[in-house]
Length: 106
Image (cartoon, rainbow, N blue to C red; front, side):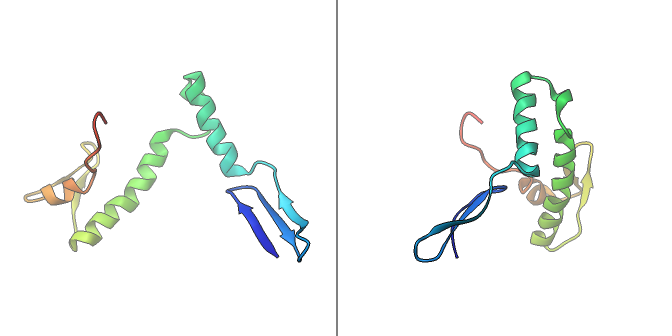
């Protein structure tokens, strides 16, 4: 079996030397529908139609990022969740890992 193309929710396969069409899937899956909902909300300028608020994704991914920063620096860190900054003496190194240098004008 040869796999021609794989995306998040769709795929096609071609079998044998004659490359006859094999199993495939073309319907939209959960991830595609999630992205479509997000684009629809942006285009409508109505965030109330989103399946889930962006803030939820921000908070969930932040936990992994904070853990990675602590691991990279090899120490326990204290984080102010309101200011979204590390607190304490000498935490400028940790705070510098919260973002990156963006190209102008971003």
